[in-house]
Length: 223
Image (cartoon, rainbow, N blue to C red; front, side):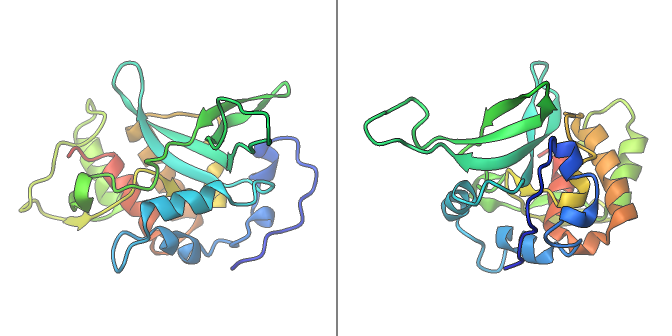
């Protein structure tokens, strides 16, 4: 297991994620992401959820998910520092055993708290069925550019050129060096995919984050 750095007194997530110095994986994310694999004896969703909920919350962790806003538009959302509410003996509350996360950054001493869904690590498609997606991040951008008015791509047929089939989970770990690009933002799936894919190609080898790449490609492709 990769060791975590000593924790200095950071005042915001922006400070913490500003550079690679605090990255416990130092850009090597295969070890982290393989825990969330969807093939070759995939990890159980409930086991993953319990492990994440009980992790040491002193160190920020980030997970990327998709949600629908009030207009039905799919948007990216980052959940930070997942942790389980600590039950106090003899003092029951509505939050007992609930798992929470932070969304956005600290503003004037306050931060938004959200519920970290129990379905976080379940397969995105019921039964773990494969989904047709563009073969690469660059191909995904090409197809989006060809349909500038669409939020996401129409479903891809099995005989469509330059595609592949993938499985993904509802949430995926977001490596340290990419958090700052989505911190305090909820871009549309289209905007988030384009921004994050360009950052991924510029700052890291996409092959080092295969599960993140798969998730991103699913996020812009209709089922």
